[in-house]
Length: 94
Image (cartoon, rainbow, N blue to C red):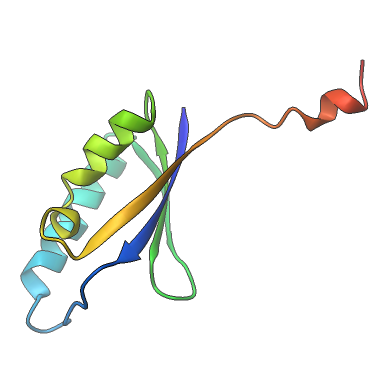
């Protein structure tokens, strides 16, 4: 199932003093990508992460994202949404 996860910042990060946790986050994100769980990742105009995940369900996505260093340390949280196939074309075919 495709999952859309949008970050919300809870506490400000400092690029200098929080350098180590940012490296940990990057490693964790790379690992999710290498496991083919994280399919796409972007920053929006506010520099908040937008992730496209492939998981069994929303609960699995919540569990995976809760293990990210920035989430575990209270810097960010994610709004998680299940994405379902668009069925609107059924209105014009069939």
